[in-house]
Image 1 (spheres, helix red, strand yellow):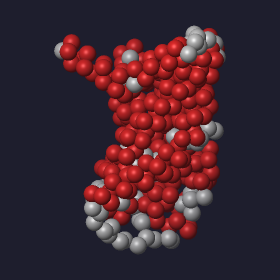
Image 2: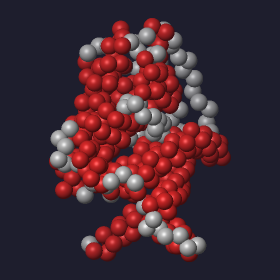
Image 3: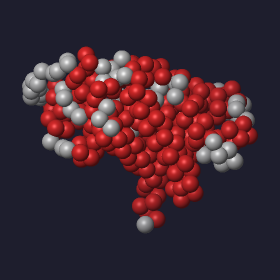
Length: 337
């Protein structure tokens, strides 16, 4: 058992977490005469290490996920989802969202396409919630920072929010609150041509490059904010706002996250820095969920497809779900960290 734990710790810290890279960068800065205990130099070390780590993991994971995704084009996904009914359909849609490495804005065109194709509204909303909130890439990155227990629970709770949220929308029969041009668009059901392995590899390369171009600016911003929090924001500030003594920390973190726009890869370095400063785990994860699922730009895009009442219901369901999950994580923090 001790051997297995040692192997797992090595995998988590040195393979996923790339702690060796942080030590290498710190050693390199020290070798040229820089003091890594200095705030400015410490910020540079944090920034360079986190950018390289996240970019390497991002590109590797997106390539693998995109290769898998090449087997599930929209028309095939529609057929797969069409075989399920009731909560099974919502669960299938939420799981499908985990293999689509999209931010909230990128998920909305697929949501519109699925809705236009005639899939039940609740099913398409389960997909819309899970796609930006949880994916296979986020699972691996979360494992590299928070550990396997936290990462797995994050994904499970995210899927629960997606399934419950989609089910509520389905039971409330909100179809009349979808814009008419979406419902009348229809879709052409064309079977995808069979792709060769070379075609799938090429597709995965294109998706990796496209995703990297879209995500990289937000990684730089996220890591930059994380470096500032890590080296410049006093720990007492973070603890007072987001620590255990503030019962409203989860709500505050969720609301702070909503106006921001980033995918989970951009929020992880901020979350990492906040956690190291004493913020509670659930509070940090609520911030991440708020940013990735309820960003203001994506809500503006979604408003083009649905009417105000349905948009308000979607925001309310996600917000309440995220806050509940945040408090659950805070309650379980001593058991899972």
